[in-house]
Length: 328
Image (cartoon, rainbow, N blue to C red; front, side, top):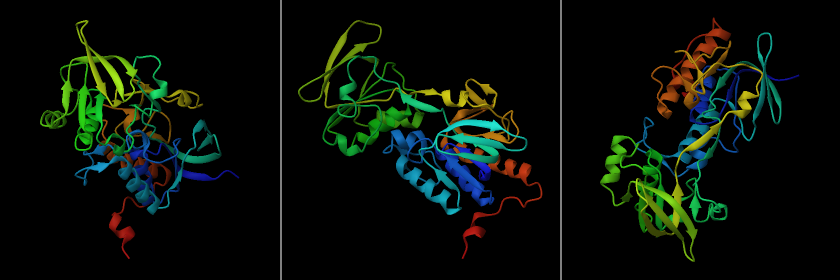
């Protein structure tokens, strides 16, 4: 007989993990299904060394460490975490949903989608023939910072992640340069201010026109925007942070028909989608005033879980204080 859950959370990033913890606080029988081999989502998988500053209670924490702490917290309440497992279909039944994965099948009374932007791939350089240099001299994710010790490093990108990487490498690398195609950066004002106060060499407005392997390191030709002028440069390593292309192909194959807005799940103020007992939180949703921050997702999870519990168990006692659950 297929096991029945109260809540199945699809996605094991920060949003899904904290929602799983809160669901355990409400004593809901809960599982988290994550397609990646580790919990923590996109930021932990691709930028484990990235420092995160906008999570309450931390003056700064590495993405990998945040993921570990969230996973530890979630396991405290008995929520099951299934890694390396992909949901391939969701079928609506009379009063529950049947969830099929690449490994198993489950029944669940409610579903909480925390899928972020779906499957993601980094946007790569528009230069042919560089595949053999990936993870050796060209990186689209952030490995251990020790890879860049005493190296001349070029970071490409104009958002907060690119600035964070450049600043993180500043005390470790021999030199750090940051190239962006616009004069202005897209990062938060405080981040841009920190960049301006650092020793990072800012190169704007330039595009990477060509990359060639050298005996040591790589030769990079930079093209100044609006001109045909090329600037020849040389670096040991290149980190490209142009963002990600996302795909929800698997979600499109599910039998359920979820309303979307701007390719995001449309939800109301209670995180409810257009389908009974299916809720959504995190970066993959849209509602007026939505902010794509981890801190925001932490607030959305409890809202959705409380509403699910109100629907499933109308007479059940509401939220309790966490201290009362863990006091000896």
